[in-house]
Amino acid sequence: MASTVTDGSRPGYGQLLRTPGAWTFLLPGFAARQPFAMLTISIVLLVQHTTGSYGKAGAVAAATGVSMALFAPQSGKLADRYGQRAVLLPGVVVHAASVSALTALALADAPLWALFAAAVPAGASVPQVGPMVRARWAARLDGSPLMPTAAAFESVTDEFTFVVGPVLATALCTGVHPAAGLVAEAGLTLVGGLLFAAQKRTQPPVLRATAGSGTGPRVSALSIPGVRVLVVAFLGIGSVFGGMQVSITAFSEQIGDPGVNGVLYGVFAAGNMLAGIACGAIAWKTGPLRRVVLGYTGLTLAASTLWAVDSVVLLAAVGLLVGLCIAPALIGGYTLVESLVPASARTEAFTWLTGAVALGQALAVTAAGQLTDAHGPAAGFTVPLIGTALALAVLVALRSRLAPRPGPDGTPGTGRIAARGTSGMDHRSPATVD
Image 1 (cartoon, rainbow, N blue to C red):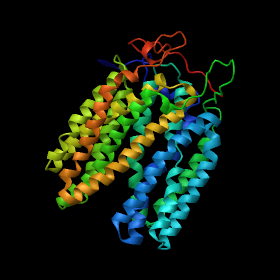
Image 2 (image 1 turned 180 degrees about the vertical axis):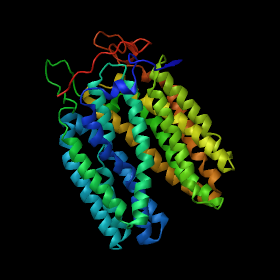
Image 3 (image 1 turned 30 degrees about the vertical axis):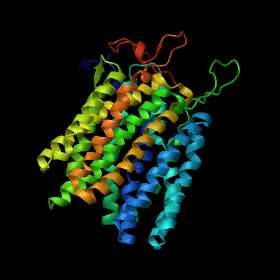
Image 4 (image 1 turned 90 degrees about the vertical axis):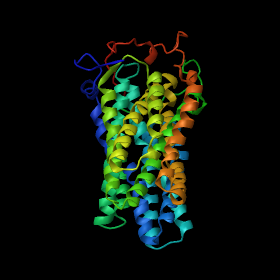
């Protein structure tokens, strides 16, 4: 149902990266989002070093993840209302200060409650750079067939971040100092966030609802039924990430080869990256809704075999397949936001989805850890299956709520994804947004 991009007239990565002003926010945005993948593992390594307990380390890290998931949408809502710069400037300062406090408390052997007290603001203030980058793409490519390519590019960037970030954090914590990972995370957040916030010309315009403006009253992204359905779907995707992290680690220890853990998770992440690259290099003839449902169905079927795997080779193969199925679901979901959500609430919508992945991951880590302790790695691998199966049931039952919102003339999706035809040939040049 798709054709590979073979010429410059089709939407591809080369055409995407030639969008005026793109590199001015992509480079600082990459630096600013790198700490997102370093925070959890850095906390685990430092707190385990100072307390000697993986349980305490995991609890502190989970508190950070949950607080991020709960507060991220509020950050997105404020960014839509007042502008990304207004939210980022104080946010990165608060985050750097909170992480520094958490680091100092851990090194001082502070009680667990004090670590939780610092972990909550550290998670709540994580700068939502990924959603902000997606919102900048959406503003510059509004109505363009390049939007799915941008969603694919961001998915690949996210996955690359989650491959590099934990490796960098682990190397710093084990090779330099147990606190070095958190110190680097705070520093990168502060510097990268400030540089990203300085790119004012590519910031999406703040659309204020005024009488006679035609913008209508400001709405919350979560009030849109389709966004709520996507949140459930992304919770299921988070359950895959969390369940795989714990269960692969436990499987590696069970077979007496802990070092294979990184290889197995790397294969899983590589599958996601490869699928993301492919999704952006294809001129799709199917809509994003169908791609989400098909991708999620494949993800659920692939996850259903994890519990039965009993060898490294088979687990690598199944993990690769699971990773390949995640990208179409993620990219399709992010692409649907353009047709479901008005521009005045897009950053909030993207942060709801990112927060849902983080929350699903935190819940899955806890559930998979309990099941693994009680029954072994095979039981832990049931968490991705249960999470995706439940989410798929909701997605299929409520898929009609993911239909594009009506355009100005009352036609569904006018000027949006649903109305662009099938060939992806009607690209209009991106307009500069000051």
